[in-house]
Length: 434
Picture 1: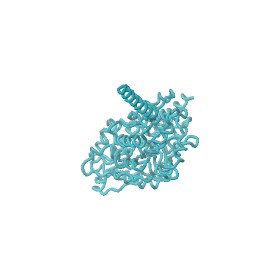
Picture 2 (picture 1 turned 180 degrees about the vertical axis):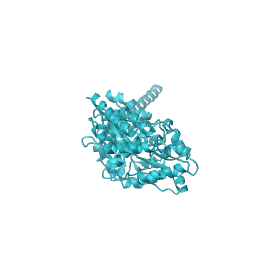
Picture 3 (picture 1 turned 90 degrees about the horizontal axis):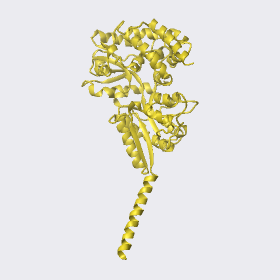
Picture 4 (picture 1 turned 135 degrees about the vertical axis):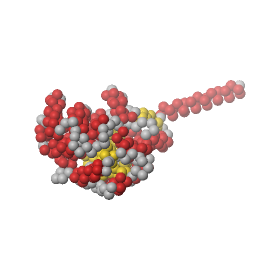
């Protein structure tokens, strides 16, 4: 009798324990997160730490993360369309815009989150960021994305090389041309260019139109269905300036740049085979292992053009961060995770461990990007990367602009031919869209 009683007690205890465990598992929330990073990348390691700490701080929560790489939006899009999206996606705002806002708004507005207290008790979450950048990506006055990383582009160079030849950072295009001529005279290619990367080639025309005609000018020409905007002489001036530095004229790029396969040119820059490169703020980190021993990375913003409307205070804001797709099962939990990720300790890891600019204004820039800081702090106007063309008109950007821009930079078509052809192809593009 006693044995039966004891056996019943043991079985009851086991059943009770199983019930408790089952109940805990059943109650555990799972946040599903698709990320743009690959395992082993610096940002991936930072976010992996964030995830581990978030789960530790929230025992009832697990985070199922898919490190999907740069094709994250394409991989998640079918699920978004089917109404079964992950709870959270991160990528550049340009990519997120195209996937979640371009055709119809399939992202969750986050203004309620931005207006809630910040992660350290700030009055408003939105006040910790470089505030004007939110306006760039709004639709009907609503914000849909929250950044954790800030990127911009400009000229990167080796200070050791500049100091060796007594060169100063150029502030104007004329000063840049003077520096380039002096470097070429010393047998150094002034500019590095991986010609097989069209979006790297595109930096030159986009920035020159920005400096000549002001922010919004590149987008205005691309979006003009009549093509008439291309008749403005400022676009021809930009094309002439690019043609002038190409191999057709002064030859300021490294030999064979038109056939250079990424990352050959940028690694050549790190080895001092060329002096300057126009690129995003990821470039020092991306080339760090290939840099010669005394390489000292410097930065200057794309120079102003004489009598141009654009100034050094017009600054590019290329943001990477989060979006919550409509239909997310755990919208509230996703918002909690976003705020957790933006704690200062993790933003300092983006700067210190990943050598990139944090989205929070109160986080110091990494040492290797210290020269970016005064330009960023003094900016009076922000604009999207590629003037918003890549985000809002991605098909025109790749199917019309890329090919013609490549040929202009390579010196295989003249400035007049470029303007004539891009105007006609822009008209044809928009006619097909009717």
